[in-house]
Length: 369
Image (cartoon, rainbow, N blue to C red; front, side, top):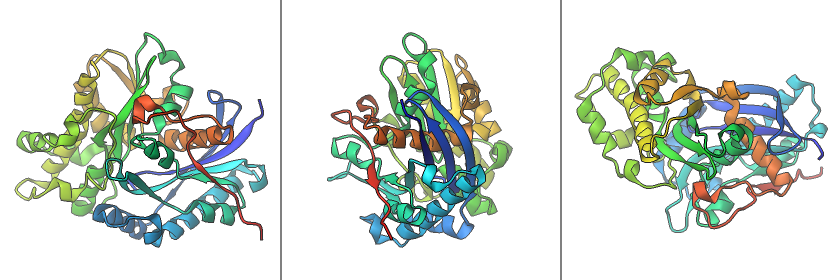
């Protein structure tokens, strides 16, 4: 089977920047990560992305000038990674770009999901075939269009977890999601991961994130506030389900001015942990190995509380499976790009609720000059 080089791009709901991974594939389960890089967004750009996501106003990607602006950032990040890897653009089979989610409405009529970053512009600026719009086919088939990573988890990280053994993947980015690997793969968004924590610390301390969860650890969880937040209907919805920062943001949090800011941060961290633990109970809480990726993997306080909340499980990072926690999603989108080039279905109806197996992603060819 021929080898393919795919450059995967991911900018998550934390809106902190672009993860880029150059990956070599010989099959859906045989891959090698060649080079990775992170390109941070400026504070000004991050604020614009978050403001747009929280407004819930745009109906099409083209309604925002960020659609073109972000595409230029993605193209630049791609070319810089290739230069660092000493790989010429002509050697790459494709760029696979998730784009920047600013609105996700899988239960609307009709359902839609908006990821900014015009794939045609990326293709034109880099001269490389680009694959984007990964969620739309699943949405059109009655699915949630998310999460998309469980199919990759099962193919690349789940071999030892198939059958009777239980293996779980926790992706704790802006939004948190669970993948349960086994004969039938289950995956869904549990709710906020870091998005509320990041927004709250930025509002109060001007910091992009709570390093090691230190600020949260300095406060005290407020049970009444935690219970109020956990009463949101989303946490009791059956899966398949998916969400985003257009729902879980500081407007959703409401007026918490009577609490100390550090106590709110402690409560928000507990919300992430308890919402994950609650979903694990719904899955039967069968003992097994848990591997964590995303920014939450580096939050020491979050990892400590997860360990306490799930005592029947062993918890570590996806590094132990061969893919560092920071790069799982960028590698995963490279995998989705590989599947698209090989005409391999890459959604999982057991995860998204779609009515069929589908090839995901739309192909954009660079315009000839």
